[in-house]
Image (cartoon, rainbow, N blue to C red; front, side, top):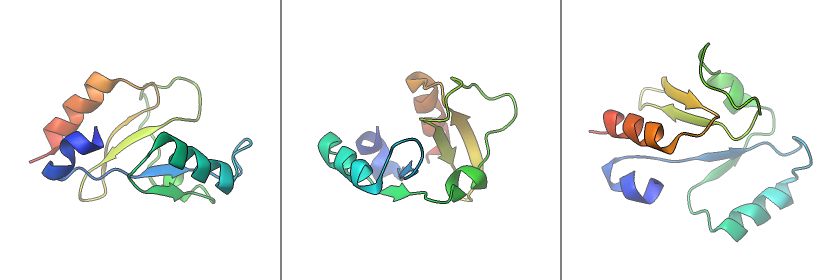
Length: 99
């Protein structure tokens, strides 16, 4: 998805929380390399990312803390959140936010 929309201004950051469950920084780095992820993956050691953009009340949830999908606009406003991944909905929101 990032490759499809990056020329239109979409920026993608992954976040990972070392220490959550059994994830270590080394395990996260290994996963990023194995999966061939080319966008930046931030290590959110203190949980600052998840507390900066808490999900709006009533948003869909799979009941699991991860993965989470946030769409933040260029002003830093959370415009979409979902951790029950819905590809079609995400594409629709991205296309609605891009110029």
